Length: 313
Image (cartoon, rainbow, N blue to C red; front, side, top):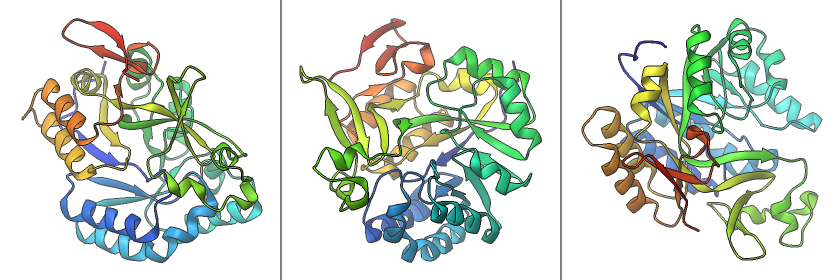
């Protein structure tokens, strides 16, 4: 294993949901002014049709984040199916001097070996893949949230030429589709969706026939109904060589969430207090950490008893 990094840092991932433009702008303004995160990823990742909601505000957001000393990374689309989407990714990569986070392998050819970030939607499941991506310019790899601890340790120890990040907080992205189940659930088709995904700023819960919580729809994306929360696991992850921890924005007080993780990384609070505080900030969604413990993703593994309990519905 690697030695524990001297310092760990927090990354704020891109907003994965459709928020109206002013809300999106004000969210990042507050992140710039108040949140203890060193890197902020911005840009549309899920659906290109949402771009016109945020594009009028991007310049102001970038200016505010830069003035606050945040490292700004631009995310690409996770699924490119149209020429205009391909052109959007091409224009983004050509125009920016900032790091770009590749959310789809199609972006790698356009990045052409320049330094970049690999996002959690790209499947990096072994060290050989990590080494290949590093050789093509990857500076940071945010590993997929479904990886267990054993896999993370193996990758980080066998491919040391890149920084590793894990998905520490947020509903986990599970799949993305060319079709929009979110629109379909409300009687629309993707081409005439009327942006109904904006009606659920934290995703649309999906339940089984017996009313058990199952998944969350976010436009063309499928997400976990639970919220990943890695707290007791952070020391082991740092020892394994993970130096960055990603907080994925939810419709809650993300400044408070960032404060919890900053306190946790600085050893100002114990993991149990961190879990309690996060539960107060984001009370409606059950927490989970099952994937890291090689269990079902919706499970919660308690350190004290080293047992697994199914997340509450």
